Structures are given as structure tokens and as C-alpha cells.
Length: 415
Image (cartoon, rainbow, N blue to C red; front, side):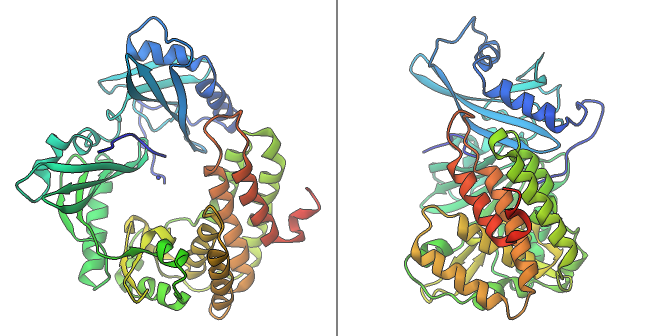
């Protein structure tokens, strides 16, 4: 049973309680402070102790949202017990929530809290406590398994739980901005149209949403095992989205935010020139290529969002929070970029990526697909930076190189 946070976008709350939006330089400074040795003093203050012994804490995860700020997670060992703390310079983090510490220093205002007392996710404590969660699940027995499978501080979390042998997925969303109600409405809209999405079992005012688990094998597992899954079969699930999804708010594709991810990578000086050059190339490519018509899209389609049956045909579509109007080429680009980002890049996955790229050329503009795939790879490179700035950034560099190859000579001369 595990509820230790792990490193899974937008809609920052506004109001007088929040700090002004930090510039990229401010975010780089905050990152340096929150991952440096001085962070130990901040953690000691939050824990109410004079000091923490050297080696008793480490940076576990870094969440950088360009334009909003930096949040860092720490594993702290005290008296043989590991506690998880987070510190954030995010402007979307309120400064007046109980059980938080607000400190002002070189990184500006920083909010510190102990997991699971996330300032914007009040239901997280309930979701991470078997005794508190049990009443929210159908069944008479206790919660016998609990695993925090995804956590984006201040934004959302996903917990897998089991009760009476039945698996459930529990989403923890921000109640203040209506995310929970929106997610529930999307699931019900798609389910009514026959799209194979998880059914909503419960939704509470504090942002706790309980979903039935779907049967099936993750698409990635099937692909690694050598299953033959044509791209048409994968996209058939997306193409079954009802026309009513066109009335939902549009979400900017990953490639449209290339400059934000370029800035996120620029906190590592060795990658700054390449990242910003690639972002420029993606932006030029977006202007020069044809994205095609506006259609219902998933918005964040990748191999982790799909389940398949024994015949390798899709049986489930997950994480439909981003469903809405968009361009099919962006869903395909997201799918291809994530395949390229899987580690290790097996021959089976590389073969699938090549086949799907060729198949996609029959219904989306190949140049538009290359540019948008590069944009998604740029976003994944930003997410691949290691928590410790002193560690090598080989994976981020690998993804940058893959993106540069897609945009060809547009950037190569600047390397």
C-alpha cells in the first residue's frame, strides 16, 4: 500500500491572495534555491526543528510550470520515518491555507506543506488514507490496496484503490475552479454516446471523483509484446467522440506552447540555445503547415490513455479531461511523440512509430505532423529533466535530438 507522491494544465486561480506571475528568470532563481542546499533550512522550519542533519533529505521531484512557478518535492528522513514535503513558488498556490508555511527569501514567496495536505487539493488526504477513503467506495470491506499512481502538486492526483477485491480509480481535483464537475460531465457525455470511458461512481464537493476501473490491457504492454495494432483502430475510439464535444472549451495543443517548454528547458544553460531554437522552429512550422479541420479530439492522446482487449482492439479510453475541439493531427502527434519517449526505445516500439507515421500520412498533412510531433517531444524533454540539477540530462537531450531531426535543417545550422 503506497501513497508516496510521484511526478502527472492550466487554469491558475486569480485573486489578491496570489503572488504576481514570475518571469522566466525568477523561475530559474526559484529552481536554484529550492533544489539547493539552503532548501534544508526551509524544510526544517516547516517541520518545526532547528536543523536537519546532512543527508537526511533529498530532492525527489521537480514540477516546473512555465509562467506559474516551480514546485519541488522532498523526501525527508526523521527518526527512521520518511516524510514527504513540498515547496512551491507557484502563483496559483494560495498563501492562507491551514497547515502550510509561507516563507519569503531569495525565491520570493514560497509555500511549504506536508503531503497529503495540498493547499488546492483538499480531498487528497482522504484519498490517501484507507480508513477515510473506504466509505467513498462501494463495498463493505476495508481498503486493501492503495497506490498514488499520479500526482501533480496543486493540480490533480490519481489513486488506485481496491476494496472487496474490486479495483477503483480515484481522481482528486481542485474543487474551487469547477474541475471536478467538468470532469464528471465529460465522462457522462461520452458514456452516453457509447465511448468506452470509465463510469463515474461518485463525485463529492471536495473534488473527489471515484471511477470504475475498465477491463483491458494497457496499449503499451500490447505493443511491446508485438501486437499488431493499426493506427486506424486506435483512432477509431477518438473518431467515435460525439459532435457535442465540439461545444466544449478548446485546449491549446502541446506544440502551441513550445516557447513555454523551451523556457522550462532553458533553466539548464547547456540546453538553453537548443531548446529555444527548437521552439522557434516549431512556431514557424505551425504557421506554415495545414492542421486540417476542427474535429472532436482527445487532447492528450498517448499509449497510456488506451486499453486493448485480447484481439488488440481498443476497449477503453482514459483521462478524458482534455476532450474537446481540436485537430486530429495533434492527437496523432501526441501519440507518436510519446511512443518515441518510452524508455527503453525497443525495436517493436520504433517499428510501430514508423508504421503509424506512414499510415497517418494518408489523412493528415505530413509536414504538420512532423512539426507538431516535435512540439510534443519538446514538452516531454522539459518533463524529463532530473530533479537534481547536478545530474546528467541525457533523456531530455535524447528527446530534444529526436525533435530536431523532425524539423530538419530549420534548426540544424544553429546547433
